Image: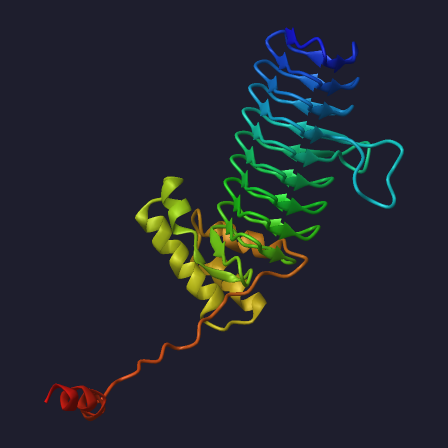
Length: 284
């Protein structure tokens, strides 16, 4: 075990012998740090936090501890961080509000500089939060979701798998799986096709999702009828994820941003002649 002399480590913390604890880190009792983890410097890890193997935590991160809430229980819950995560500088993640529950971070996630995850959130695997993302309490984020810089997510919202949220979005409703939101309007602007291709989805699967997208946003169906149509017409993965996601919502869903029809401006020949006439007179 490699622990810098300036680090403060509780003897009641369980730290694998292959882990590295850098300068000025503080590790409280009841912390578990698995094999291959690296805490670079000035990292604070509160009681009840578990860090999975080969996770790297950069300078100034604060993991676990008291949620930012006016009614905090004396007996906080846990923070469980999975394997191979990258937690960059000044990341903050809070423990659960209740002793029998946990804030959970999956495997292979990247949380970039200054991102914040509040109490009782659940992140899937390979989630990316870019700089300054703020995630309120009880938020659920699916596998491979991507949140752009300074996006803010209201408590109890859900973001589906492989959704991509534009930078500076203000989300107060759920974002369905596989979709893309615009940062300026925080509204749906289509499928996350690049993310789908990178994740290995086939052309047929993407075509299926496009058809489901049209059912959701282009047919003008009432909500219950839209969900029933999805369940009836799309019976295989990945489109089946959409119907189940809609069935589980309680906050409503982000709507599609529809652009106004594009207008073409036609310049008639006689107008061109009038515009060019002064130059012709000068030339003569």
